[in-house]
Length: 283
Image (cartoon, rainbow, N blue to C red; front, side, top):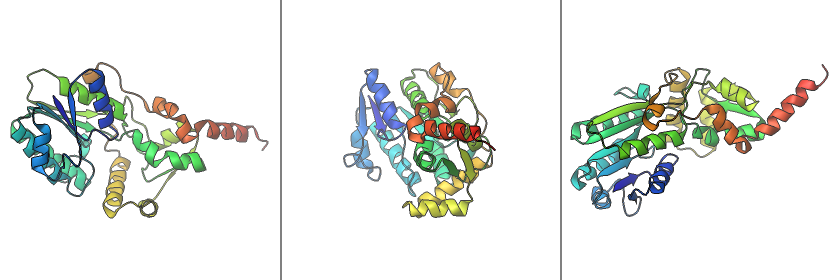
């Protein structure tokens, strides 16, 4: 039995679906029955499971929530934890965000617990473009973001999920491992704009922060977003790896294919049509 914490989000829903397609018994742990702030409820939810998929939401108390999950896992007899973590270059006691530091602390605690583990350190997920970029691209024909011009080794959440499934089903005797999950090539926001047929405007952090607050983002969410934007803009997460292919047996999805798949969300065809008309207009 595999227990799933975080099975309804961008990555977790694909993990749950793929396991169920394979006929693997799973138990989705969610509130109110299983609450990350209540160790006893987590322990009861994990009873009878031997493996745990661990993905917690961005939260000021993330370190505490994952510590609770680990305590419950040990008490319930979980043997292997597959944790979705932060990008490898961001992890450490001085990471760029409190979330990155929490991921690092959680990894250290899991490794020290003696349980088998797999840490999936994903780069920037392509699905973030749907939430943060697509609405403005579709409405204005502009890609607006404070992400600078450095290359980013973006990864599709579905590839992260497939790696998680492989790690959850692994029957080897390795006590643990960590992999930095990326797409096949690094792309900048300039590249993304070119693929979409629109213009990229690199926003200043202050302007981006104001926009996020107008959209209702909390102070924690704004701080996290701007710190991560600065991290990606630095070029720190621009080196692709072969981890997805190594662990799943197939190459990761490329950004160009992802954007084409979600053409309607970005209004790509309309923008390219306008661009073609402008290019034919007399000088």
